[in-house]
Length: 180
Image (cartoon, rainbow, N blue to C red; front, side, top):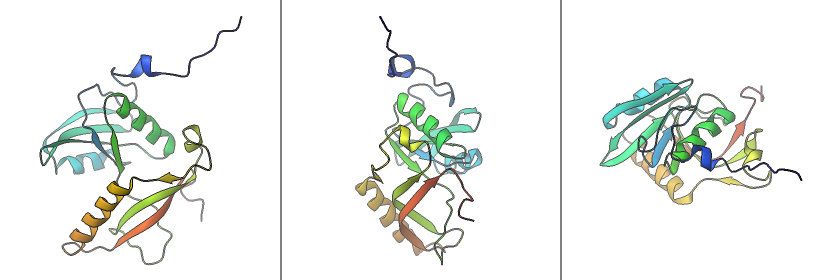
């Protein structure tokens, strides 16, 4: 008789302290902003009321506070898809449900400048990590309602800031400088 290996990890991780990001249930909000750089988490925390650093382990720093009465967290993902996948899975294990990637992005389109806002409507999966979560042909499309809200907010605040707003497809790639 051959034993089968269960691929369901939930009994080992759901509701428990998470190994890589070192957070526990109740320490993060449903809504999580995901910058790559741990220092950007501190910049985000300045806009939250009663923000507290929850954990900082490896490249994953987490702060939680409130924004307009809603509990919001920010967790750094480090660089690349594998460490992002780890952070998102572990955040979901402790109750997070909505994830928004924020921060820098490589731009190949003419006319884009540092400081411009880019709202991604979907992403080409040019990485190795995505194939563990979805079939290669499955479209990586963002939530329409969230994307529309982000775009509308960017356009609204464009008048106060000095930036342009772009929207469209992006790419997730393992080779950050591969196009050069």
